[in-house]
Length: 341
Image (cartoon, rainbow, N blue to C red):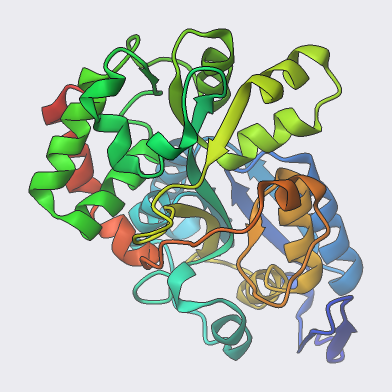
């Protein structure tokens, strides 16, 4: 049975339309994002379209392996994850299919799309430098290169070099500055470590506040979460730590994405395209920005987020996400050579 054409006006002014069969009134989503705001996002999509979202959560590697095992019988329609390298890994495995959507191409800047437009980002995050306000002059750490300066020997905290956040930063440095400078930078960072890499991004910020180190790398939104916290201990961390958006006089600050794509074997392709198009709406972009303090990729989306506003504007490195992903294997090679464990 064919349902009548469905036309839904969203808060952003976009329109979703097209015939949806009874079998396509459901969307099976595999996601490695675990944010409460996404729940609201999916519920709003269902309200707008009548399409129910069935979600399976997991770590990106686990979900990629699951899709591979399921093969052509996979129920997954859409795969969502963080970092361009993870999206490219899924694409390299042959999971994604191109989407013929003028809406997506018009709304998502080319910077935030895969090289073959089979996946795209819907929000982005910055890799920033944090410093102890009592021990470091921010003028001395305006660039990623400064983290490798010998004057900061024994004063830097980082998480594992193998983590995708650091691997992608390394990929951008390779692309922007070449192999020799990138490897030299990684070795310099390792030489400046205050302790062996451990913990997550928030742990690095806390370590700076506690005096365990004076400088650290972290994604910006971990700091925004601390800014939004009502816990006195978190507010004390915010008081003791400052943030720098590096390379403002050069290529700009490295950013990465949350994104997704439609599975080649998706049983509900019409629903999958509608969902991915919905993620480009101003309404959806609002939830990404306010839910996890990420920036929307759609230029017309202007969320009201006081913590992002406090962080201020910055110059973004314009490196295309697809190109960034292609340098990820070499980045890991250099990280290993530098001894960044």
